[in-house]
Image (cartoon, rainbow over all chains, first blue to last red; front, side):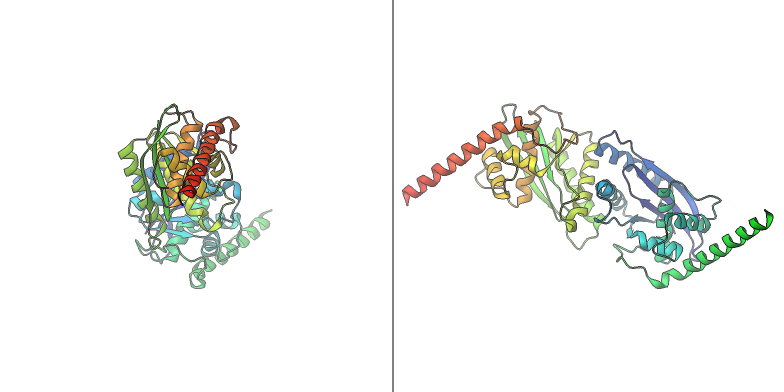
Length: 201
Length: 201
Protein backbone atom coordinates (compact mmCIF):
# COMPACT_ATOMS: atom_id res chain seq x y z
CA UNK A 1 0.00 0.00 0.00
CA UNK A 2 1.42 3.38 -1.00
CA UNK A 3 0.47 6.27 1.27
CA UNK A 4 1.26 9.96 0.97
CA UNK A 5 1.41 11.79 4.31
CA UNK A 6 1.08 15.56 4.61
CA UNK A 7 2.13 17.71 7.57
CA UNK A 8 0.29 20.84 6.42
CA UNK A 9 1.85 24.29 6.61
CA UNK A 10 2.08 27.45 4.54
CA UNK A 11 5.77 28.12 5.21
CA UNK A 12 6.86 24.48 5.33
CA UNK A 13 4.61 21.63 4.20
CA UNK A 14 6.09 18.19 4.81
CA UNK A 15 5.17 15.51 2.26
CA UNK A 16 6.26 11.90 2.64
CA UNK A 17 5.50 8.84 0.53
CA UNK A 18 5.94 5.29 1.87
CA UNK A 19 5.19 1.77 0.68
CA UNK A 20 3.88 -0.43 3.48
CA UNK A 21 3.53 -4.21 3.18
CA UNK A 22 0.80 -6.28 4.84
CA UNK A 23 3.43 -7.45 7.38
CA UNK A 24 3.85 -3.76 8.32
CA UNK A 25 7.36 -3.37 6.92
CA UNK A 26 7.71 0.10 5.40
CA UNK A 27 9.94 1.57 2.74
CA UNK A 28 10.68 5.21 1.97
CA UNK A 29 9.58 6.25 -1.53
CA UNK A 30 10.09 10.01 -1.32
CA UNK A 31 10.10 12.83 1.17
CA UNK A 32 10.13 16.55 0.51
CA UNK A 33 9.35 19.76 2.30
CA UNK A 34 7.39 22.16 0.10
CA UNK A 35 7.97 25.81 0.93
CA UNK A 36 6.38 29.10 -0.02
CA UNK A 37 8.05 32.47 0.44
CA UNK A 38 6.50 34.67 3.14
CA UNK A 39 6.63 37.74 0.85
CA UNK A 40 4.11 36.27 -1.59
CA UNK A 41 0.42 36.86 -0.89
CA UNK A 42 -1.52 33.95 0.59
CA UNK A 43 -3.32 32.89 -2.63
CA UNK A 44 -0.01 32.61 -4.47
CA UNK A 45 1.59 30.77 -1.53
CA UNK A 46 -1.28 28.26 -1.55
CA UNK A 47 -0.89 27.79 -5.32
CA UNK A 48 2.86 27.22 -4.89
CA UNK A 49 2.28 24.45 -2.32
CA UNK A 50 -0.60 23.00 -4.40
CA UNK A 51 1.64 22.78 -7.49
CA UNK A 52 4.26 20.86 -5.53
CA UNK A 53 1.69 18.53 -4.04
CA UNK A 54 0.17 17.73 -7.43
CA UNK A 55 3.59 17.04 -8.91
CA UNK A 56 4.33 14.52 -6.14
CA UNK A 57 0.92 12.84 -6.53
CA UNK A 58 1.50 12.65 -10.27
CA UNK A 59 4.95 11.12 -9.82
CA UNK A 60 4.24 8.58 -7.08
CA UNK A 61 0.52 7.77 -7.48
CA UNK A 62 -0.29 6.89 -3.85
CA UNK A 63 -3.47 4.96 -3.01
CA UNK A 64 -4.36 7.10 0.00
CA UNK A 65 -3.56 10.48 1.53
CA UNK A 66 -3.04 10.92 5.27
CA UNK A 67 -3.28 14.43 6.68
CA UNK A 68 -2.67 15.81 10.13
CA UNK A 69 -5.94 16.74 11.80
CA UNK A 70 -5.68 20.42 12.69
CA UNK A 71 -7.37 21.66 15.82
CA UNK A 72 -8.79 25.11 16.29
CA UNK A 73 -7.11 25.21 19.68
CA UNK A 74 -3.65 25.10 18.06
CA UNK A 75 -1.38 28.12 17.86
CA UNK A 76 -3.55 30.98 16.62
CA UNK A 77 -0.78 32.62 14.56
CA UNK A 78 -0.35 29.59 12.29
CA UNK A 79 -3.77 27.93 12.42
CA UNK A 80 -5.25 29.81 9.45
CA UNK A 81 -2.44 28.96 7.04
CA UNK A 82 -2.45 25.36 8.22
CA UNK A 83 -6.22 25.04 7.78
CA UNK A 84 -6.03 26.66 4.33
CA UNK A 85 -3.31 24.24 3.21
CA UNK A 86 -5.37 21.34 4.60
CA UNK A 87 -8.34 22.50 2.55
CA UNK A 88 -6.22 22.74 -0.58
CA UNK A 89 -4.69 19.29 0.03
CA UNK A 90 -8.13 17.74 0.58
CA UNK A 91 -9.48 19.34 -2.59
CA UNK A 92 -6.57 18.03 -4.65
CA UNK A 93 -6.99 14.52 -3.22
CA UNK A 94 -10.78 14.55 -3.69
CA UNK A 95 -10.39 15.60 -7.32
CA UNK A 96 -8.15 12.56 -7.87
CA UNK A 97 -10.70 10.34 -6.09
CA UNK A 98 -8.08 9.51 -3.45
CA UNK A 99 -9.30 8.60 0.04
CA UNK A 100 -8.19 11.12 2.65
CA UNK A 101 -7.72 10.17 6.29
CA UNK A 102 -7.12 12.56 9.14
CA UNK A 103 -5.04 11.55 12.13
CA UNK A 104 -4.34 13.60 15.23
CA UNK A 105 -0.75 14.18 16.36
CA UNK A 106 -1.31 11.91 19.37
CA UNK A 107 -2.69 9.12 17.17
CA UNK A 108 0.42 9.37 15.02
CA UNK A 109 2.75 9.37 18.03
CA UNK A 110 0.94 6.40 19.58
CA UNK A 111 1.05 4.41 16.33
CA UNK A 112 4.72 5.15 15.66
CA UNK A 113 6.29 5.13 19.12
CA UNK A 114 3.64 3.37 21.23
CA UNK A 115 3.33 6.54 23.30
CA UNK A 116 0.83 9.33 22.48
CA UNK A 117 2.93 12.02 24.13
CA UNK A 118 6.23 11.15 22.50
CA UNK A 119 8.34 14.18 21.56
CA UNK A 120 9.45 15.11 18.03
CA UNK A 121 12.87 13.54 18.60
CA UNK A 122 11.37 10.17 19.52
CA UNK A 123 9.03 10.25 16.50
CA UNK A 124 11.92 11.13 14.18
CA UNK A 125 14.10 8.35 15.61
CA UNK A 126 11.34 5.75 15.18
CA UNK A 127 10.56 6.90 11.62
CA UNK A 128 14.23 6.47 10.71
CA UNK A 129 14.28 3.02 12.34
CA UNK A 130 11.01 1.84 10.72
CA UNK A 131 12.17 2.94 7.27
CA UNK A 132 15.74 1.73 7.79
CA UNK A 133 17.22 5.19 7.27
CA UNK A 134 20.68 6.06 8.53
CA UNK A 135 19.63 9.54 9.65
CA UNK A 136 16.44 11.10 10.96
CA UNK A 137 14.70 12.99 8.12
CA UNK A 138 15.04 16.74 8.62
CA UNK A 139 13.32 19.13 9.18
CA UNK A 140 10.71 17.81 11.62
CA UNK A 141 7.98 18.44 9.00
CA UNK A 142 9.56 15.75 6.80
CA UNK A 143 9.66 13.17 9.62
CA UNK A 144 6.12 14.08 10.67
CA UNK A 145 4.78 13.58 7.14
CA UNK A 146 6.39 10.13 6.96
CA UNK A 147 5.08 9.26 10.44
CA UNK A 148 1.56 10.19 9.27
CA UNK A 149 1.85 7.98 6.20
CA UNK A 150 3.14 4.99 8.22
CA UNK A 151 0.52 5.56 10.92
CA UNK A 152 -2.23 5.52 8.32
CA UNK A 153 -1.05 2.30 6.67
CA UNK A 154 -0.68 0.57 10.04
CA UNK A 155 -4.03 1.75 11.38
CA UNK A 156 -5.85 0.54 8.28
CA UNK A 157 -3.97 -2.76 8.25
CA UNK A 158 -2.25 -1.86 5.00
CA UNK A 159 -5.40 -2.56 2.99
CA UNK A 160 -5.08 -0.68 -0.32
CA UNK A 161 -7.74 1.96 -0.74
CA UNK A 162 -8.91 1.62 2.85
CA UNK A 163 -9.17 4.86 4.73
CA UNK A 164 -10.25 6.00 8.14
CA UNK A 165 -12.51 8.80 6.95
CA UNK A 166 -12.45 11.48 9.59
CA UNK A 167 -11.19 8.94 12.11
CA UNK A 168 -12.30 9.60 15.67
CA UNK A 169 -9.63 11.15 17.84
CA UNK A 170 -8.85 8.02 19.81
CA UNK A 171 -5.85 5.75 19.60
CA UNK A 172 -6.81 2.12 19.25
CA UNK A 173 -4.95 0.10 21.88
CA UNK A 174 -4.80 -2.86 19.50
CA UNK A 175 -2.89 -0.89 16.88
CA UNK A 176 -0.14 0.03 19.32
CA UNK A 177 1.32 -3.40 19.94
CA UNK A 178 3.60 -3.72 16.90
CA UNK A 179 4.77 -0.14 17.38
CA UNK A 180 5.38 -0.70 21.04
CA UNK A 181 7.35 -3.78 20.17
CA UNK A 182 9.37 -1.82 17.59
CA UNK A 183 9.92 0.99 20.05
CA UNK A 184 11.14 -1.35 22.76
CA UNK A 185 13.46 -2.97 20.22
CA UNK A 186 14.76 0.46 19.27
CA UNK A 187 15.34 1.39 22.90
CA UNK A 188 17.17 -1.86 23.53
CA UNK A 189 19.26 -1.33 20.42
CA UNK A 190 20.11 2.23 21.46
CA UNK A 191 21.04 1.00 24.93
CA UNK A 192 23.23 -1.71 23.42
CA UNK A 193 25.02 0.66 21.03
CA UNK A 194 25.42 3.16 23.88
CA UNK A 195 26.98 0.42 25.97
CA UNK A 196 29.19 -0.59 23.03
CA UNK A 197 30.30 3.02 22.61
CA UNK A 198 31.10 3.30 26.28
CA UNK A 199 33.12 0.08 26.10
CA UNK A 200 35.21 1.51 23.24
CA UNK A 201 35.94 4.78 25.03
CA UNK B 1 -15.40 46.67 -12.58
CA UNK B 2 -16.80 43.18 -12.04
CA UNK B 3 -16.15 41.74 -8.58
CA UNK B 4 -17.00 38.33 -7.17
CA UNK B 5 -17.52 38.28 -3.41
CA UNK B 6 -17.33 35.12 -1.31
CA UNK B 7 -18.72 34.60 2.18
CA UNK B 8 -16.84 31.35 2.86
CA UNK B 9 -18.50 28.36 4.51
CA UNK B 10 -18.62 24.60 4.15
CA UNK B 11 -22.38 24.22 4.70
CA UNK B 12 -23.37 27.45 2.95
CA UNK B 13 -20.94 29.50 0.85
CA UNK B 14 -22.38 32.78 -0.39
CA UNK B 15 -21.16 33.95 -3.80
CA UNK B 16 -22.19 37.28 -5.29
CA UNK B 17 -21.14 39.00 -8.51
CA UNK B 18 -21.61 42.73 -9.05
CA UNK B 19 -20.67 45.29 -11.68
CA UNK B 20 -19.59 48.59 -10.16
CA UNK B 21 -19.14 51.78 -12.17
CA UNK B 22 -16.53 54.46 -11.44
CA UNK B 23 -19.36 56.64 -10.03
CA UNK B 24 -19.98 53.82 -7.47
CA UNK B 25 -23.32 52.71 -8.87
CA UNK B 26 -23.60 48.95 -8.59
CA UNK B 27 -25.60 46.32 -10.47
CA UNK B 28 -26.35 42.74 -9.48
CA UNK B 29 -24.94 40.19 -11.95
CA UNK B 30 -25.57 36.97 -10.03
CA UNK B 31 -25.88 35.66 -6.51
CA UNK B 32 -25.94 32.07 -5.35
CA UNK B 33 -25.42 30.11 -2.17
CA UNK B 34 -23.31 27.01 -2.77
CA UNK B 35 -24.08 24.17 -0.38
CA UNK B 36 -22.49 20.86 0.53
CA UNK B 37 -24.29 18.07 2.38
CA UNK B 38 -23.05 17.44 5.93
CA UNK B 39 -23.04 13.68 5.37
CA UNK B 40 -20.26 13.87 2.77
CA UNK B 41 -16.67 13.78 4.05
CA UNK B 42 -14.80 17.10 4.15
CA UNK B 43 -12.67 16.55 1.01
CA UNK B 44 -15.78 15.86 -1.07
CA UNK B 45 -17.60 18.81 0.47
CA UNK B 46 -14.68 21.08 -0.45
CA UNK B 47 -14.69 19.69 -4.00
CA UNK B 48 -18.44 20.31 -4.28
CA UNK B 49 -18.04 23.97 -3.30
CA UNK B 50 -14.95 24.33 -5.51
CA UNK B 51 -16.85 23.01 -8.54
CA UNK B 52 -19.60 25.57 -8.01
CA UNK B 53 -17.13 28.38 -7.55
CA UNK B 54 -15.28 27.51 -10.74
CA UNK B 55 -18.52 27.34 -12.71
CA UNK B 56 -19.46 30.86 -11.55
CA UNK B 57 -15.99 32.23 -12.34
CA UNK B 58 -16.18 30.62 -15.76
CA UNK B 59 -19.62 32.09 -16.45
CA UNK B 60 -19.13 35.65 -15.18
CA UNK B 61 -15.36 36.25 -15.53
CA UNK B 62 -14.92 38.77 -12.69
CA UNK B 63 -11.79 40.95 -12.55
CA UNK B 64 -11.26 40.52 -8.83
CA UNK B 65 -12.28 38.25 -5.96
CA UNK B 66 -13.18 39.62 -2.52
CA UNK B 67 -13.16 37.21 0.39
CA UNK B 68 -14.14 37.63 4.00
CA UNK B 69 -11.08 37.66 6.22
CA UNK B 70 -11.54 34.85 8.72
CA UNK B 71 -10.20 35.31 12.22
CA UNK B 72 -8.93 32.52 14.42
CA UNK B 73 -10.93 34.01 17.27
CA UNK B 74 -14.22 33.23 15.45
CA UNK B 75 -16.52 30.40 16.48
CA UNK B 76 -14.30 27.35 16.98
CA UNK B 77 -16.87 24.86 15.66
CA UNK B 78 -17.02 26.44 12.19
CA UNK B 79 -13.59 28.03 11.89
CA UNK B 80 -11.86 25.04 10.30
CA UNK B 81 -14.39 24.55 7.50
CA UNK B 82 -14.42 28.28 6.84
CA UNK B 83 -10.63 28.45 6.68
CA UNK B 84 -10.50 25.40 4.41
CA UNK B 85 -13.03 26.92 2.01
CA UNK B 86 -11.05 30.18 2.06
CA UNK B 87 -7.92 28.27 1.11
CA UNK B 88 -9.73 26.52 -1.72
CA UNK B 89 -11.22 29.81 -2.99
CA UNK B 90 -7.82 31.53 -2.89
CA UNK B 91 -6.21 28.64 -4.77
CA UNK B 92 -8.87 28.74 -7.49
CA UNK B 93 -8.49 32.52 -7.86
CA UNK B 94 -4.68 32.37 -7.87
CA UNK B 95 -4.73 29.72 -10.61
CA UNK B 96 -6.83 32.07 -12.73
CA UNK B 97 -4.42 34.93 -11.97
CA UNK B 98 -7.27 36.84 -10.33
CA UNK B 99 -6.38 39.33 -7.61
CA UNK B 100 -7.80 38.32 -4.22
CA UNK B 101 -8.59 40.87 -1.53
CA UNK B 102 -9.54 40.11 2.04
CA UNK B 103 -11.89 42.37 3.97
CA UNK B 104 -12.93 42.01 7.58
CA UNK B 105 -16.64 41.94 8.49
CA UNK B 106 -16.33 45.38 10.12
CA UNK B 107 -14.66 46.82 7.00
CA UNK B 108 -17.55 45.51 4.91
CA UNK B 109 -20.16 46.87 7.32
CA UNK B 110 -18.43 50.26 7.45
CA UNK B 111 -18.17 50.47 3.66
CA UNK B 112 -21.78 49.42 3.06
CA UNK B 113 -23.67 51.03 5.93
CA UNK B 114 -21.21 53.64 7.20
CA UNK B 115 -21.18 51.85 10.54
CA UNK B 116 -18.68 49.07 11.40
CA UNK B 117 -21.00 47.44 13.91
CA UNK B 118 -24.12 47.34 11.74
CA UNK B 119 -26.18 44.16 12.13
CA UNK B 120 -26.98 41.67 9.36
CA UNK B 121 -30.39 43.24 8.78
CA UNK B 122 -28.90 46.69 8.17
CA UNK B 123 -26.28 45.23 5.79
CA UNK B 124 -28.95 43.28 3.88
CA UNK B 125 -31.18 46.35 3.60
CA UNK B 126 -28.33 48.50 2.28
CA UNK B 127 -27.23 45.83 -0.22
CA UNK B 128 -30.78 45.70 -1.59
CA UNK B 129 -30.89 49.49 -1.77
CA UNK B 130 -27.46 49.86 -3.43
CA UNK B 131 -28.31 47.22 -6.06
CA UNK B 132 -31.88 48.45 -6.54
CA UNK B 133 -33.39 45.12 -5.50
CA UNK B 134 -36.97 44.85 -4.35
CA UNK B 135 -36.12 42.34 -1.61
CA UNK B 136 -33.10 41.67 0.60
CA UNK B 137 -31.13 38.71 -0.81
CA UNK B 138 -31.62 35.62 1.38
CA UNK B 139 -30.04 33.82 3.16
CA UNK B 140 -27.66 36.21 4.92
CA UNK B 141 -24.68 34.48 3.20
CA UNK B 142 -25.99 35.77 -0.15
CA UNK B 143 -26.31 39.37 1.08
CA UNK B 144 -22.89 39.16 2.79
CA UNK B 145 -21.21 37.96 -0.42
CA UNK B 146 -22.73 40.88 -2.36
CA UNK B 147 -21.72 43.30 0.40
CA UNK B 148 -18.14 42.02 0.18
CA UNK B 149 -18.07 42.52 -3.60
CA UNK B 150 -19.48 46.06 -3.37
CA UNK B 151 -17.15 46.91 -0.47
CA UNK B 152 -14.16 45.79 -2.49
CA UNK B 153 -15.10 47.80 -5.57
CA UNK B 154 -15.73 50.92 -3.48
CA UNK B 155 -12.58 50.59 -1.41
CA UNK B 156 -10.42 50.24 -4.53
CA UNK B 157 -12.22 53.09 -6.30
CA UNK B 158 -13.60 50.70 -8.91
CA UNK B 159 -10.26 50.46 -10.68
CA UNK B 160 -10.26 47.24 -12.71
CA UNK B 161 -7.64 44.80 -11.56
CA UNK B 162 -6.84 46.80 -8.43
CA UNK B 163 -6.84 44.82 -5.23
CA UNK B 164 -6.12 45.43 -1.61
CA UNK B 165 -3.84 42.45 -1.14
CA UNK B 166 -4.19 41.31 2.46
CA UNK B 167 -5.58 44.72 3.33
CA UNK B 168 -4.83 45.80 6.89
CA UNK B 169 -7.74 45.34 9.27
CA UNK B 170 -8.63 48.99 9.49
CA UNK B 171 -11.47 50.84 7.89
CA UNK B 172 -10.31 53.92 6.03
CA UNK B 173 -12.30 56.90 7.20
CA UNK B 174 -12.11 58.43 3.73
CA UNK B 175 -13.87 55.44 2.16
CA UNK B 176 -16.87 55.76 4.44
CA UNK B 177 -18.23 59.05 3.25
CA UNK B 178 -20.21 57.93 0.19
CA UNK B 179 -21.56 54.93 2.12
CA UNK B 180 -22.49 57.11 5.04
CA UNK B 181 -24.26 59.40 2.63
CA UNK B 182 -26.09 56.44 1.07
CA UNK B 183 -26.99 55.11 4.50
CA UNK B 184 -28.36 58.44 5.62
CA UNK B 185 -30.34 58.68 2.40
CA UNK B 186 -31.70 55.19 3.02
CA UNK B 187 -32.66 56.05 6.58
CA UNK B 188 -34.38 59.22 5.43
CA UNK B 189 -36.19 57.29 2.70
CA UNK B 190 -37.28 54.62 5.18
CA UNK B 191 -38.48 57.30 7.57
CA UNK B 192 -40.39 58.99 4.74
CA UNK B 193 -42.04 55.77 3.56
CA UNK B 194 -42.78 54.89 7.18
CA UNK B 195 -44.42 58.28 7.57
CA UNK B 196 -46.29 57.78 4.28
CA UNK B 197 -47.49 54.37 5.44
CA UNK B 198 -48.67 55.81 8.73
CA UNK B 199 -50.50 58.54 6.84
CA UNK B 200 -52.33 55.94 4.75
CA UNK B 201 -53.36 53.90 7.76
